[in-house]
Image (cartoon, rainbow, N blue to C red; front, side, top):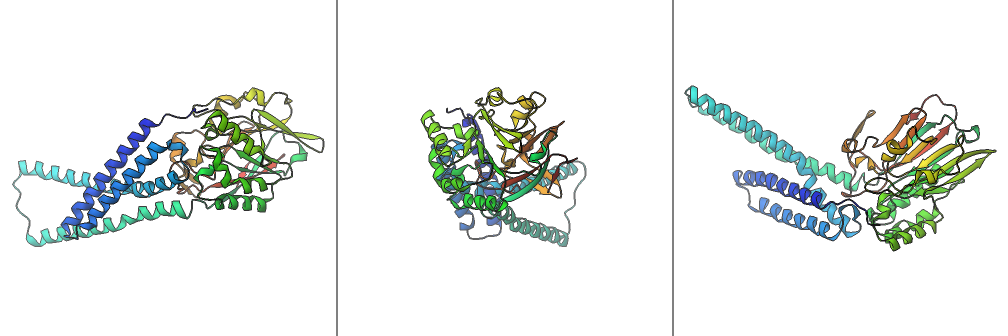
Length: 418
């Protein structure tokens, strides 16, 4: 069961990057404090904090798999993230300044070799020095901004759940299901929650939406079946006329065979219909809608059996597939099956990025071809949910946690997102 990515090298590289960030940024800060003749503890204290954060990082790496953190490890990594991540922005500014200074020094050196340089007048020197001092003071003052942004992403927007409404045009949808509403959540990662309250809010939102069906596309936990205790009470209260269906994600396999069986039994005991390489047939007014589900395929796992999940499905039956990893779309779904819609998650939308006036960007798009939102290939459609939990850094910047509400349309001419 422990098929998980080998991230030892990744952890070492990331740790080295963090160390270099601290050495570079705190080195510049130390120089600034000394030039200003400030109290030495203005830089000594930060070096002490940096040492503590480095210890926190390696404690987490040694104790747990990077992608399996929960409880205390998530707290530790939260402090590590708040300490290091803003330094990427600060380092960029400092590096740009150092490059400019280096270029100017090179130009001066070259000029001195060809043309005698007369020392500038004292007023000019004083003006230039004053300007540099002002810019340096301003730059260090603005260095607090990245910390505010990251802190906001960790404490204010981390559980600022947004509902995205999607009118989903399905070419073959029977008229009996026109207007049916399906709510999707994904990537709960119960171990990333500090307590039961975040998922309680998710359940409250779902109750208010009153969908006809609820689907959950995998990753109930980070690593341990015991994490389910944080969400069990509210998960059991989820209710919809046509049922609550779910499938498994890669994190739902990061444990022993016995623990995996415990997790499956725990999910099913909460009145969630867990679909593992099989399907369900929803009947309405004599028409049918197939809800199929595969186990996870992707991220070094291959538990999904799409053929088995679709066995017995008639060619003309409208089919919605629940599959955690969106890479299955290109691998097995497009053009190779009669699946009308696939609903996935896994990417978390990258957990940080930009969404502004229809423009979206995230580092996730360099890893996943389909990383968030709605995609189409002919009459087949894929939707990638941005998830409600987190993995790694407990933060979301620009990519809020998502609850998706689909309205199925039998005769719409285009899809509309609102």
